[in-house]
Length: 235
Image (tube, rainbow, N blue to C red; front, side):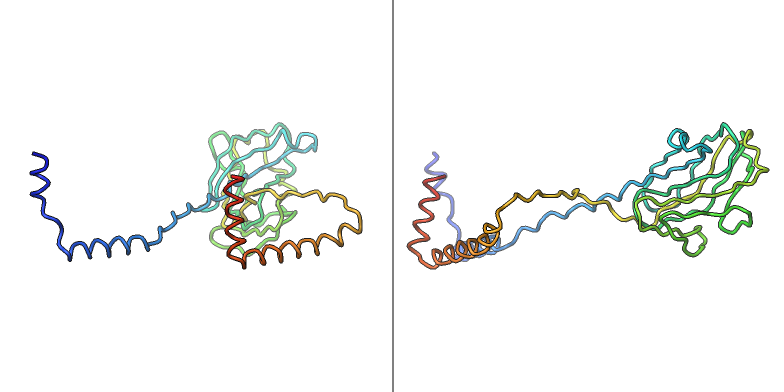
């Protein structure tokens, strides 16, 4: 019964055979497109805020918020200073880039503004810069350009009329528009082995001789066959 079924199968025509051979040849020549690499993730930036009066309390009295570059971030951070506020330091991130500071403010328990700083506001506060340069003021805020990995903005002196005992919240509007990506692979220093002075002068000629010998062997068909056989035996 199987033989009868096979005999009933009509063989493909000559045109179909030629078309099949042609399609196989075309498919064999097609190059497989490499998979599209995923876009690298933007670096995570960490905003830090310091407000101490004593240097030894610097790390204990800091706030940190992580964010990505893009739209303006609006934070409302619980903030109850234990003593009088003399200055406030804002570190926009740990990478060189362009940042935007729109405003920062102290609020009371009902989130009523006690004091607000904006680039347009007129006050006796001066902004001391470390590792940054102030750019133009736009609708998005004060542009801050940094070429270092430790940009800092120190606002001082704060107005004495601020009632630090009523402060319960710190509001800040910040953004990072361009951030320099960190190195994917850390740089590594390679230790150079100590060599005698005469050995250094012999390294280059030895390398050149080795390359020339390899080229000579590749010119000979017989030597290339022998090299292949040796590789198979060793493998």
